[in-house]
Image (cartoon, rainbow, N blue to C red; front, side, top):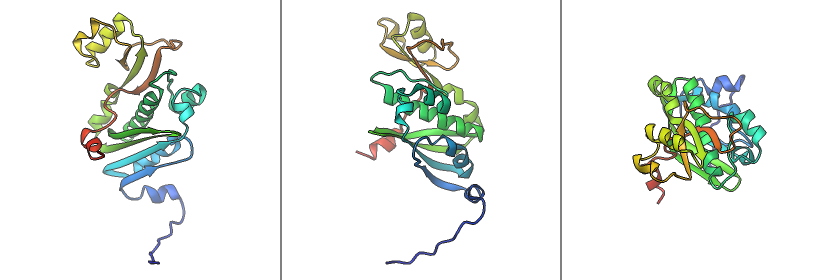
Length: 204
């Protein structure tokens, strides 16, 4: 068996982790990754990869709405897109953590596999991207009204001809007012791409 030199970390583990810029960090806890996100953002280099797993699938997919609201500040409608909504809520949570540290994210890959959700993102130290965070966050609405479709089209989230036949679902910008008690609404969530074409192509 090959011998490896191990350097013990003594003292405050968090201080040791953030003492240098890491280029790749994988957060794979039992349950929610939320408690680890800020430390991970501080520990990354100016440009790095962050992979985040979440096994609290019942919360993120909307089956357990109270933990979902407590941990992620969001709600998810129980429908066929609940796991996609959960991934987008997770991405929004990662993006907000990045913005708190003057960083922005670019999603590379987002997957749901049985009992866990996992996202991989490129993290950049870029204050302008952090300031533009709200442009990538919003709501998903089921059976939108004509006014909601118009708002989605105006925000560039739907093609202009969508108003001819109302879609089953659409995204709305974060600035669009929604009613807390409206059961059609999921979010706030990431409304941008959930993956990068080149990263996805490398898997085929």
